Length: 377
Ligand code: CP3
Image (tube, rainbow, N blue to C red):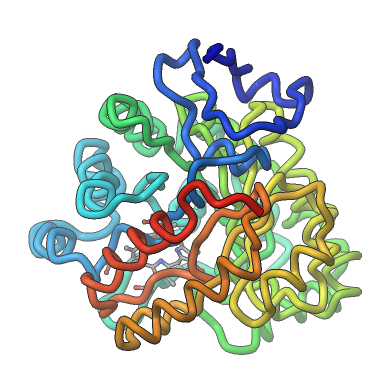
């Protein structure tokens, strides 16, 4: 059998789509190119890749134990700890990707906002943005200056992952989701403050979103330069918008951030929830892979998105609480809807929940691989 020579991700534009079933060898990296990376490029894989959003976290006993000694921001800001937590789910399950342990909110600190994770309450910004002066004052530091701990954690964890052939995902919140936190001062139900600024003060909104697109774009780019092989943009709260508002007041900034990040030449996953009214717009903002939640059937979503993008999703995270036969049926349905087409990355439709039964996670990961091994569409 002749060995195929794979191009590196930075040469993806030149890369022809493959027609055969062979798993290529990436000679430059020294290990077989992973099924996760191949799926990002819509290449055929030996089985469907799977990873889980928020795969490191409280549902794992190893994580809870570490949290008894350290706060979440301590873990994020100590590269050795962040690296250790990143590896926890990779060691426990047969996952096809790792995601760097961080959060979408630390970039706000470098911009001048005061962030705290309050027990039982979630994230709190003590000095939220409320005025034109606040926007003026927001800094846009280089990520090497304000987020060096995550860049260092990426360098550390790559060493661990490379020997296992598992790629690393870097990530950032999208400009809109970050702006919501910065303006609201924390989680919110209706985003009254943020959307009021968007609707009523378009010039201020523009200045704010410009700053966020710059910070997000350069943060993503720096993560790829530090060693992240794939980048994911989380626009978790984008579903709060009408399609017209998304198109006119948010899409240009997400697009700009993704354009900056795409200079790294690594695949970009663009994820949002509640996006049924604007899936095509989400795709138009950019991304090689579009992440969808469970509120839409995977085949319907993929048809709307078209064959030029890969798709990630989309099991309801609550399905992991169901008895195994029921969970299996639901996972199988998603795989059947994907129909073995190259370019499906199995994931949840949103982050894994804190009390998820670990056994079901293990079974799900193994089932996705077993069910799809050597499957020909
Ligand atoms: O996926 C991973 O394993 C990497 C780690 C990761 C975390 N947060 C760690 C975390 C990722 C990718 C995130 C993203 C994130 N953070 C998002 C986007 C994804 C989504 O779920 O929509 C958002 C909106 C946040 C903001 C955030 N961080 C909230 C609202 C909270 C509190 C609520 C909660 O889930 O506890 C956090 C805290 C947080 N970030 C935890 C973890 C593991 C739990 C903190 C703890 O240990 O107490």
